[in-house]
Length: 355
Image (cartoon, one colour):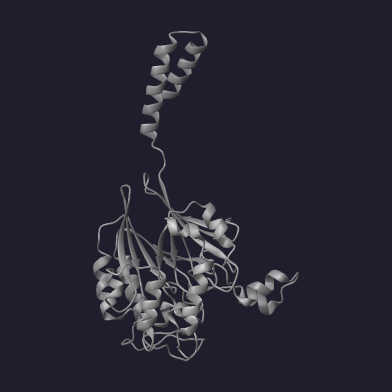
């Protein structure tokens, strides 16, 4: 009907019919049309992990072009770990990274959590002797306000309810380092433990998690530096503590609210699905695996290298992506439609998925 009215107006305008009256009518029609249809409001969150301060970071140009409202760093935000556990390298890494991150990020909402390389020791857990000093370095670098709870308690886990127009995002950021029990061996390949007394989150963080996940929201967004759903690789993952993974999955499955897990760590990107649970892993922003780097430079890739570029996890919904990447979450606050995607170094979509 509104289109027909516009058509009639233009016909009458051409015929010189009551120009002043028809202009007023046209303004009214357009006002009603756009009020009813609504101008789409989209909130865009970028995220990624594993960004080495000593390597170029060209991916930021593609991320900036996406006009994001927020960016979430999922860990290994610097590479400052040292086998001794000393923090000298970590301090220097933060200084270097401060000169590498783009200035436009200062105008965006930034969320961050650590993984092992910005924790201070490779694959480190609760027994890391300098973890509290490392926590202070992290909080200082990311300019976390002094009145934030993370300055007053152990660990970097936190929760925030983000209101976007009429849409509520329940952001839950997990700390998978500070309280995590020892792994079953000193280095990869790791195998799952059968000791149910071990933990990833620790009792205090688990109790907190069970409380904050029950807040009313339109989307629960869980940030975990290491993968929760994936099981079929030999690196760090929640499945190294199977009882902790099952506990997490049970809690998430009990919620009627849409839920999304995002993770990093792997230097690969992929979408994993278990029942209704979705996990999007985005890694790395500028540090792909050696196999990926080699494959990119060779006209013919040897089979030994090809094998390292393949992942056969039964929960993986697409081919694993081995090169630089970042993730996006697009929230349409009018329709409450949520689209997630993995994007390459140039900003091209590798794959998309609608929750």
